Length: 296
Picture 1 (cartoon, rainbow, N blue to C red):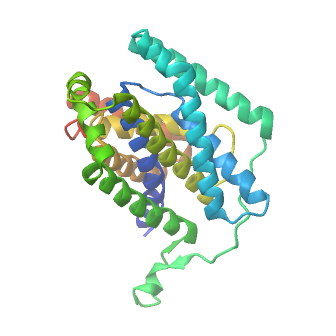
Picture 2: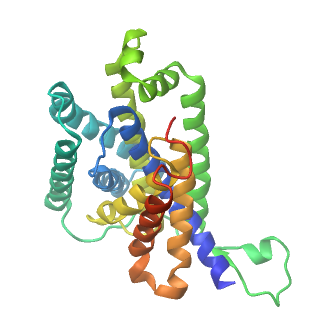
């Protein structure tokens, strides 16, 4: 029963990783950018959400404001950093170094503005859901409980993923994004406005990243280094699912999230990141292209 409890907890962590990993794989698939600042954008979104919530705003509009703030931060970086670097045809190594510098800048900015103290949303206390009683099992069966806000995280993730699927598969911008991911030169020759696709990529990525960061704050505290500690599981999820494949990133995120939580039984909580790293290394050795084809 304890293992099943950890699996349920892993589903909520996997949900958060899924949204963040999709944003990470979109920036790589379309912009060819391995963005190590991605986790710190999660932190930025969570802090803007917390700030709005602490001023008396409900958590849901606060999350929307967090998303707009994160999108704004990403678009500023696009204009000041990434677009000039693309124009200069900077190497992938140069882009990685710049993204690490951007991550440090974002983290330092969060520390400067809000300090190093952990923060919590102003949320009503809701009793954990007793799944054992909910499905009608006898009282002799040990109670299996899941925190209410963990259920909220999973449900919200499903809704967001369904919306993302509709955008990628049915909207004009989604089809253009898939074309650019497949072959940017061919897409440009075909008349697709690549710069517009780039901007929409940041908008979608910023929204997903901010929602992921805000949801992480729902089940734990908001702290300056939260995104940095999640960047390795995010990359592990992207690599596991196939780099550039949003649906693969979602599947990989749930595998990583559940594996990390279940490993607590055997290794303790201090080795969660080690589990993500181990899974990533083993997969790279066995199947470097990931479990799924790396395409949108």
